Image (cartoon, rainbow, N blue to C red; front, side):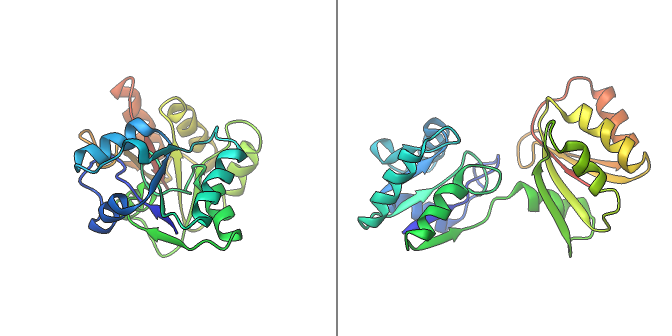
Length: 220
């Protein structure tokens, strides 16, 4: 069985009892960074060491095949990402897809999600929303932004600290300075904050703040 285990997106207390049980019971834990997952397991006194297997965006098909082989042998493998739910903006979907094709039982263990956390805290309509992950850096970027100009439902994207200023500038150009927006930064972590206002107001806010750090979720 392959268990898709959601891990905390920041605060280590944001994990379910079921997720902790699965991490204890699994024969192996496939993770992006063994050091980060090791810290989580250590926080909850869960044995790790030999059970941790690295599986990240640079892992080749041979690593996927090895994990599938273990699953077909009857092993229980827990798939985790560095933060949040595997398969969302990370390489986990490749393994999940292959496991399903191989007839392996795949079970999701929810909950941590930066998307949903930012969405529900935004105060915007949550009945319909579009999640786009990280929008393209170059190719198709302008096409995607143009396609969003007439959207009537809430849109959620991720952005890095290196591109947040440029993205907000482009959003003001494409969607207008007065468009309501919420930007969540470092959600669930010590310096969590939600900047609320128009796109222009949020741009000005981060300019005044100077060099900002952290991970961003933009909702508009």
